[in-house]
Length: 488
Image (tube, rainbow, N blue to C red; front, top):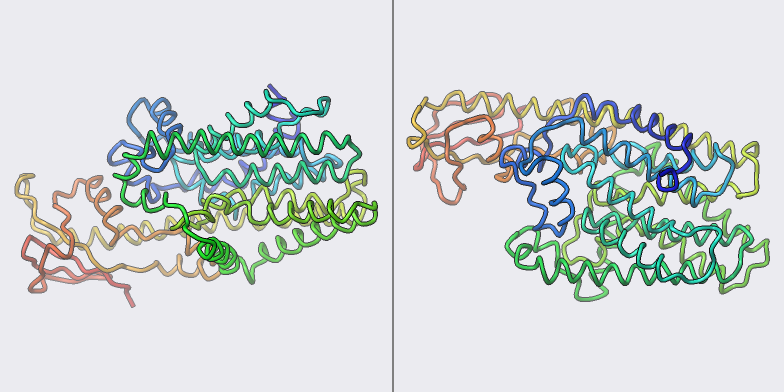
């Protein structure tokens, strides 16, 4: 069993670290975004997004109907993420134990996975997708060299399962594959081992893409087409201009989120140092120009790997949760700082260990702040909408339920806005529910508010009936209209 989890002490250390980092998620979590809809309807709606294995496992795990089992799914996700980091440490990141564990632990960094962990129902499936992708990318027994079709089939099957759980995990496979190339470049090994490994992973990727494409674009196409929003994000690009635009959007999103922050500075420093150190070692060892170019191309692949599933899409979803493979990329690039044969007692070793410690301290503060800000926003919106709805007349019979239009936005709570100033990435994570039909409707149903949510283009408001902090209530042609606004 440990072959698929990693060394026991590595795994247990990473589990403890992850639990400490994500303790605020386990204790302060509230229904978030899609979770509000899932809790209300009991349906996961993942077939429409090309995630059939998630739909199947959710059906089995929740006995056919989604219910709130928090924090159990998030606890399970923590264990799975720790297993992915442990496999990465023991199979790929060859170095003294403290160094490789410190590097692999960056996969668990709070600024990377917080968005994924906030999803009560999706968290374990996202984690399992990442674990399978890492396992597929690092599947190369040291005792066997030469091309193996059996390994290709196993890797391809793992990748198909990963894509069927959560497609953005593909970036972790690409980063793990590149890391194995770096491992071969830095340690003596047979040329056939390097060549066969790269060929196996490329073949497995093509195999997985064909099988998953057949599954999604042929068998599940009618469901995806009926999904509206989902079908929009399943369309592929039509030219290189869109690919370049998506790459630019990926880079600018990282810059907006992390420029000027300690985490961003550390990531840039560690990634740059690791890439330069690898290139200089290859030059010193007399590697050919062609091989150096191959390694540099692998470095570029590690950098763009987190957006691998977004770059080819016509309408990409570039959010922290879809870029969570960046944790694997960060682990790989930081590992390159320390030569595999070096002791941890070198300046590079101390740099790696010190950087990892600072990143995790920052992560703990970030996770706690993110969860507190999210809770503050939820309570703020609850107060506003409850105050507004308390002014509606009491109509006990469901058939007498009036129409209700909700427009505008209450903006962000003051404490939430303060947290966003400190951590700009929270602008992409904290989603105001009020004013968005897909979240307002299930919220009203869950709170047993007997109204019929009516789109603004199907209703007309008239006289003002009352107002309060962040809301104004109007009479309307089909019942009532609540206009939300940012309080002064």
